[in-house]
Amino acid sequence: MNVEYKEGLPQSGGITYSLNETTTELTLNGVKGKLKINLSAEQQDIPINIDICEDDKQKIKRGSEPPSVKYLAELEIAERRYQFENITTEDGEEIEVLNEIPFDLSQVTLIIWGTEETENA
Image (cartoon, rainbow, N blue to C red; front, side, top):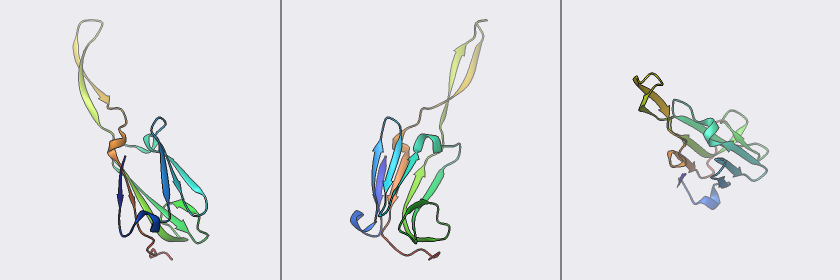
C-alpha cells in the first residue's frame, strides 16, 4: 500500500493506521475510535475513492457528509484488473477466458491530510 502525506506532518493529521496484509484489512485510528476497511472487498470494476473524516464528537467516520468537521484522509483503490488466458476444453477446443487478477495492495493509496476544517463544519 502506498501512503502519502499532504498539508502537514502525519502527527498533525489526527490518525494513525495499521494494515493486515494477509486479510487486506486497513485499520484507521482516530482521536476517539477506529475504522476498519477490508480493502479487497471494496475493490470494484471502477476506481474507488473513500473519504475519511472526523465528526463533531471526534469520532473517525467514512464519508464527508455532515456532521464532518475534519477531513483526515482519502483512500484510493484501483479498479479490478483482468487478463485473458487461453485454455483447452475437454473437447480439445481452444478458447479465451477472462480471469480476474488477484487483489494487489500496491494498487491502493492512502492519502493522509492535515486537520483543515471541512466545508461541512
